[in-house]
Image (cartoon, rainbow, N blue to C red):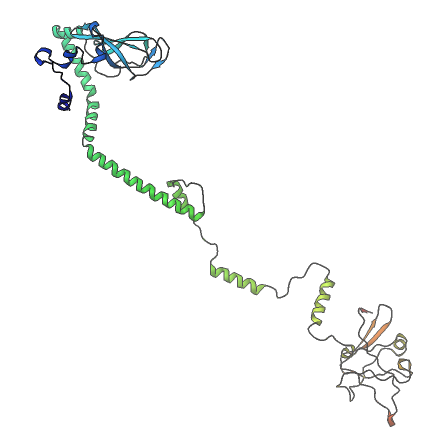
Length: 392
């Protein structure tokens, strides 16, 4: 870069290096250009950075540490052989000028005018920092033997108190000495943690998709695992036990449906009607019921069992022909004995008595008399039983 800059400079024809020395002297300018415009007054324009936080006296605004200004630098004195410089700059928020200078004795800066320092200082001795030795103390250490002995004893006592801290600091520095190995171990641990976190996220996403959850899952803890281990989820009955209980219930169940709530008579009437549906309804002939009028029943009494079946006993009973004017014909009623029959007597609701014989087969049909003359026995009339009977 230097060679290229040198070759790119323009040297006029009348330039004499022995006479002028440099192009700046030839042109009569300073190498710092505008920064050296007040150099005759001992002022140089520099770039100054605020060393601490201050409050501007003109606008009362806060100016933070590190803010840069174009400041006028000049020498105002010396501290022994160290020069003291003063800096004058204009606030960027107002027209106020701030002046501050170096303090070689305290290794700090001091505000001369135009601003106020924000107090954030502390005592170096209380903060266990190295305090710079004062000039008077240095002279006493050089001339006074007793003061030097006392100072040495105090320094050794401070060293003994600081030995553990120094040893800890040395161990920490030795542990961090190989920064490449430490960085490698740290990156490896980060990779392992990242892999573990990715696996946990995948497992949580799979569980959410399986259970249809939209809420985030928190990581499990040792207490949760302990409580989950104490719980046992199992069915109270196995499949075989359920099948056995089902068969037992079916075998002990009644074949008939449960009776609906109501009067017992209705239930019996329903059961009776259901039983009559299984076969043909009974007829009075099959039951051997003979119905007679109340006058005949009162005069003749109940029918007595007759003696056996006739020739037509194996056929169903037929109503006999009406001889002598039907039921009004004279003559005693037919008295035939029915084997195994029972005599019964009923009274209808209207008060009409009813008597007959149950069982023993059907009564015989009427026969013709001698010479083909009809029998004068009154016919026997078979009628179905009334809807409702009431025992006498």
